[in-house]
Length: 312
Image (tube, rainbow, N blue to C red; front, side, top):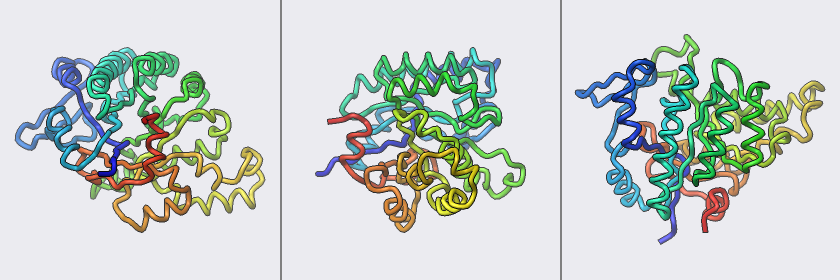
């Protein structure tokens, strides 16, 4: 049987669950046992399925789906960029150490990414180095911090460290806070991919892929809307000198320097993505166990994912 992989999946170790139960001073946590819902810091409640918190249940779901190896990520609800940096750092270290143990105990089945206190970029750089030294592959990060995009000068220490480490940076959106999107779950349905689009377009147009060429940037949910509007960026590059003057290559070339997961839920959209960037830049992902997961993950190039994760 062909090996199947998943580069976009989430897990909450027991140590983190215990921290959430005990940490109520800085992080309001609401448990709805009847609906099995967890809401952290008054934002983005989600169904706390067993596969989120029970490793046996998670690995069994993986086995039933014939997924050979998964890249675990912390949940974005626990990025905690909007609280005191000391609290964010405390949880990041706890979360990362727990994921290190899981990955080292199940090396054939699991790899993992760190979370970092991006609200304190210098500390985020230190935590990224510590986590990768302990075996993690890089970090999952949000697309912005307090309305500052990732090309803000304050994040340069973090980018420099990630580049020096050849780190994977998995850019995973948070809910969009545009007040126009409050109804009909649009903060998630279109707000989430929009946040990725803004972040990725800013990195592309800002020349960040030239500035930090060794960082492997993975974009969630097929890259948001960016791949499907790359022609508009290309047109702007062709006609507007301020756009072209900051870039060393056309936007389509930069698009092909990102990596993308397959979480798009439509084979026609996935085919367009493959046509645009090539099979070696599209990796199998699911967003499991969230409600809007694509499970089991649609598979792409075996060689691409093995090279991306550094697996035999």
